[in-house]
Length: 192
Image 1 (cartoon, helix red, strand yellow):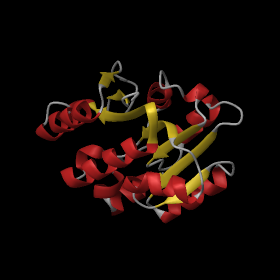
Image 2 (image 1 turned 90 degrees about the horizontal axis):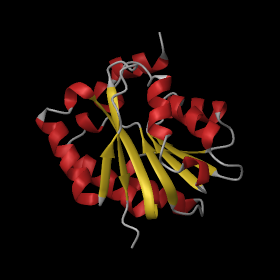
Image 3 (image 1 turned 30 degrees about the vertical axis):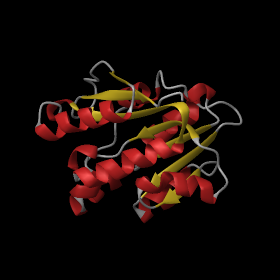
């Protein structure tokens, strides 16, 4: 069984999924975001690195990738499997401070695999505000949600949060080839 499955069993309020995102969802969340032209792509909650791998395929030569992972064992595995990326340990709400600590620029793209639906509202707010502080003007943010959660009160609240914080919010087609089926929220920060 995958290490993600055991992490989910040990702490379902932190991990949120028992299996990694499918290749189809990884392609969808990294599409139409500007990854190919980004100087810096940040990923929140990379877990085992399946989305990270897709970002690595798309990022331009000379582009930088930084990831934030709260679990030490997963962070160590990411450092081993992706030696050319910067791995930060800690809460995703501190992304801006983490980037500053390594003299990295603001991100052009932030991609999240975090399980927002299971987070308390206060943590959602902290992370989303951290994303906004970390993005360049006009930068993009993507996260996914499971189809069954979209009609639940927490899912509706989360969509409203995105619409309050970002002037542009759209959704992808449903990725049926994922367990469970999911879709991607694509958001753009104000260009200022």
